[in-house]
Image (cartoon, rainbow, N blue to C red; front, top):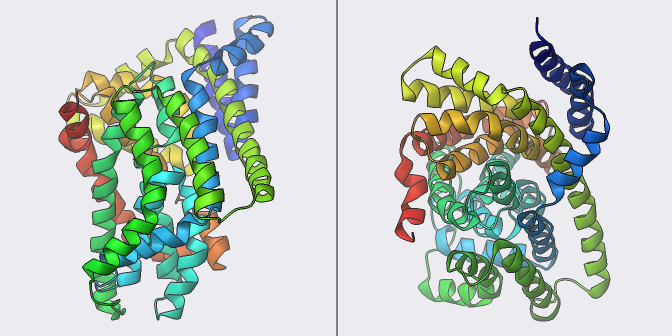
Length: 430
């Protein structure tokens, strides 16, 4: 056995053993990288060099701004207004509150960019509201946690920025555009599933559709929705970079939350910033340690080995695409979203491009796969948050979510095999 083969075995086996032993993911990544460096005979001083290099990126500066924007808007009383807007749009349908939940997640996801924030914010309002109107509480929780994944696809999403960096400079503006239609497709599949279940269980309808009420709620919510327009139009139009747009969005969010909606005080702003720092510290530690791990993978030619191994299974691009989805889904069951993006992108992106999947389309595929992973035990963060918000056992929530897993997998397969779903808007706007 050569030193390279031994180093690869030590790196991967130690990493997965520590994951199964429930080590914090940053520690697992860092320690397995240290063991790999020792086996190779490299000095440990290179560990610090790679970590610093991993977070020394201008484009990465957009991440803390997007996180701050999402927290400020989430704390600023936006949730209730977006729920009212969604109710005016789709509340009249059978299972109206389930539809409201899904559409509100699409709106809120464009502001928070976080499935966890979506579940915590909207779930605390909508789950009790749905239960009071006669919906089963486990069904309400299942709708909330699955629809929250729309926020990962709808821009601005800090996970897209992380993917763009891990993929070696993919256009953030193109990724933002690519997320809209897949996010809408996911919402439609969930709405169809909700409609079928609501019809069978005789869940109630909401009030009749009123164009006047829709216009009224739109006029109230326009201040929140304008933040999305500022970011996406600014980046896509080349007015400013993703980092600059995120910084502008933070200032705008502060003004809207404090002075227009008045949902947060200046004291609350400091608490929100404290929450941002906690989240950001976790993200940056993961990025720094993953940079070392990724360097080890590249130096040991693991991406080339993985490409040959996966392509060796079959020459059929459809089989290979399904294998990529399966690998990402399995990783989602044992790892959180950011480390999957940082670690798996350098390995799996070459495989995807070899069968004609563009880096932008693969980014959307990866993010949706990771989103499904957030809902699966044993480490599904959004699943735990949904269970905590609804005060239901996790097993009951998982059982109620099974039909929605099917809806999400249908959306995933369509996005994987129909490139136009992801690429239509990026191609349209050049």
